[in-house]
Amino acid sequence: MGITVRELRKEDIAELCRIEAASFSMPWSEKDFHDLLTHSYCCYVVAEEDGKVIGCCGFTDSLHEGNIDNVVVEEAHRGKGVAQTMLRELIARGEDRGIEAFTLEVRVSNEAAIHVYEKLGFHSVGIRPRFYERPVEDAMIMWR
Ligand SMILES: CC(C)(COP(=O)(O)OP(=O)(O)OC[C@H]1O[C@@H](n2cnc3c(N)ncnc32)[C@H](O)[C@@H]1OP(=O)(O)O)[C@@H](O)C(=O)NCCC(=O)NCCS
Image (tube, rainbow, N blue to C red; front, side):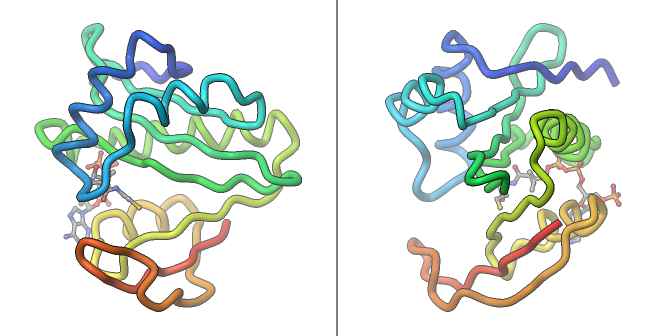
């Protein structure tokens, strides 16, 4: 598998928005991505195969805690370990800048994502009721 993980650049944003729109009921806009590129406390990476962006994930550094969000892999490339590869690299980058703990929220029905996060050492610490919209659903809060 020729997957490369590198930092997000502005020329990736249009393609990422296409992947997001196909994957989330409330996808991020191009402006959302452009804004985070201007914040030094945000760290986002993309996965690339043969020069094509196929996924992304990132964190916001909040007082040395990394809040991970926007974990997504293009549907045609799922099940090949791309999310695990991206997240391992993201966590390594966070640790390099002194982040000791990472957290994220995930829909309680999202078994594939929960499986990935547990494989990477995250565990559930509780439920945030009705956290998500479209459709309304509880979030599992996970920490690593
Ligand atoms: C969640 C997501 C990012 C995973 O990406 P991916 O590249 O397919 O993940 P990986 O290939 O690294 O790992 C998938 C793992 O989940 C497992 N899996 C797949 N479907 C599963 C299911 N229904 N239940 C449990 N495990 C499942 C796979 O077997 C694999 O585990 P393994 O390595 O032990 O075999 C991807 O499915 C996605 O983009 N989903 C839509 C967006 C989303 O829900 N993002 C998460 C928001 S919190």
